[in-house]
Amino acid sequence: MSIELVAFDLDGTILENGDTIADECLAAIRAVRDAGVRCVINSGRSTDFQAELLVRHDVLLCFDALIGDERWVQLVDHESGRGGRPELRPLEPWNSDVQRRWTALEPMAEQWCRRLEDQSAGRGWSCRPSDPRAGRARGMWWLTFQSAEQALELLDWLEPRLAGGPLAANCNGTIVHIYDRACDKGTTLLALSRHFGVAAQDVLAFGDNFNDKPMLDGRYGFAAATVANADPAVQEWVRCTGGPVAGRACGAGVADVLTDVAAPRSIRDRPAGVGIRPRPGS
Image 1 (cartoon, one colour):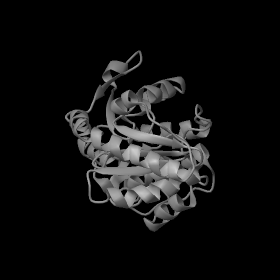
Image 2 (cartoon, helix red, strand yellow):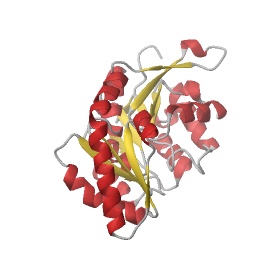
Image 3 (cartoon, rainbow, N blue to C red):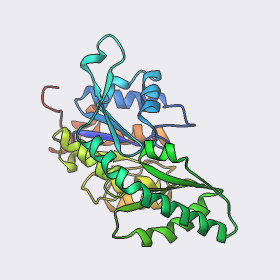
């Protein structure tokens, strides 16, 4: 394995308790960055949240891009960050294309959201739909259920009905998202890696939940890794690609994988062709 870019999910992967990245995870990210490997966040969280989080942990300059809401890409302008906080600039034409497609698909997504509400009511469950303005801004509609089990059952009802169409759905905890099939964590990461000139097989993706599947199950050729707290199904996807499942949870597990797979000090102990490939000029 020769890694040129590492993509990190946030919640449950490097982010703990909604606001903390462990010190050993931060150290591992800095070491990988110092070795010349690009780092990006790929999360359902907004890029504003991500930027504030990374500034607070003093690692924003370790990252080259932030993927927010699983589809919007903001590039970190390192030149503007000399002596201060770097600016973020959108990846174009990707972001504009995402917005254009969603404008056309949003009415259909709203209809499916209403049908999912009806299915929930028919089972005697209550749920909370997304605010239309928030859905428009984020490029998806979603429903929040009372339990993860309810969300998964209704996702099982919805997915075959969306198959073959322009919309897709996923589940993250108690939330079911309905979104443009062309914009998930996998397709967006693929577009970003191509922007940086990095081949898919040289990308390592970390995730822990069902919405991470497109970047973990091998469909786009990424290397994959996960952590001990990941859902068993997620761990199985990663194992099927030959990727590592860390023995520890969250950031500690990420640090372990980065040390074993990509940390500079471990390269000398591996066969030729395995480890980090620094980007040109690093």
